[in-house]
Length: 457
Figure (tube, rainbow, N blue to C red):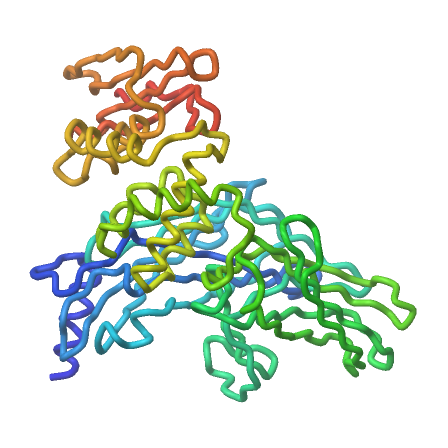
């Protein structure tokens, strides 16, 4: 019976089919990815990839008295020099929770994988999707340099961890050098989720008899050291580890850098590495730059339920920063969400991310128009490419439409004369569904493809 139930669950997760949705996601699907590089040998390094997901942002069905969900993850690593595919891995990650009050539902789900990679430059592509709602997905593409290590004292990347403790469970996924090292790929710490910042790094080519000083520095966005840890130790081995912790519950919210230094007995720096991350402590208030604006936004949001605020922030992702999306996903209380959104909209209305100021009411008005005008069979209007461009830049000054025929697909060119001395956006109905996908633009920061006309064939 159990084997039959497992087969049914796996079939549902693999096929992406859903007969009856038993537990809906609370917001947009979010993928978090981080990585660390460790020494392997003279020709290669060990690249460890960390993946993080939020269980409450998944779609669930009931099975065997539990809620069951799944995440499909496709990881691809391509050599920049040769375009050779070094890694091409697809996995299905099942997620099972007993009820929505459990910690497994409220806190991030983390996993990792590792690969021996020749030294060189690579492009890392990760695509993840909700197995029971395949249109709900997130992805990233980033460049990864895997350099060789020198014969002098060297340090690996710093792995930022949510948990770090002694362990002898060598078959555990997170076991590493006598420790359980659980990564935090979201890179968000604070009282709401991970009050202690744990860090792990490997040291190579140590002098086993020498005494070293390991110094950890917490540095804010202004370059000021706000917290510091120092300890002296003799590692006693040629290759060792440096693992530490720092309580950050009393640190103001914001973006920070953790810097790890290894010094000799004369306080001379021998090795260093650093990692950027975020601290979210909603109980601490940073100096407010626009208190009146934030108060006004809080009043405007006062009548919204938690679900309505979730939907609003999901639609506002086009003007949100990556760390804001990560932070909002971790807020559980209605008052916390309202406070976060109030601060968020006050910043958007002041102008940022190289975008001009935009009023919340105007942004949401454009979302409504996009839903009415650009909705397709599978997507709400605001989710489409034309909807996104309309929301961000408003009504185009001119639209050039070309209807399709037997030899060419239909497309549209949107022209904006007042942006960057004139820009254009090209959308093609690539599959004949009425969903025009953007294939080219002359706007800075948008996709550019001078050979876009190949999509018309």
